[in-house]
Image (cartoon, rainbow, N blue to C red; front, side):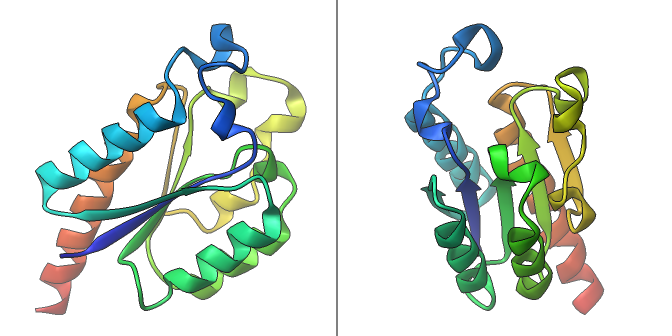
Length: 151
């Protein structure tokens, strides 16, 4: 079974409490359950993690090389700042889907730039936590296409 790593950046552990008028009422546990249910339906496994620490996220990305089939990442506040995460994702050498709960392009100007998008296969933003399930489905399609290409 192929495993998808789902990484979540800073403050996402506060979902449901943090600005629910912007991020909604779902908690990170709700997001994890959504990802697990979607992965099960698609015949995939997941490794779901969250950290407020940039270096820990970088280490987890590095661990993905050879261990997971793809990465779904909500870099949160590190979206606009982390060259280190960008570099780690380039090294990981696997499909990456960037997810944001809100539409970052409708928010403050500083949120419009993403270092992570430079390496992402695709970006989903503004669709709430449902974006994670969409990312899982998109990743399943990407992996199926790769498998066909390898045959």
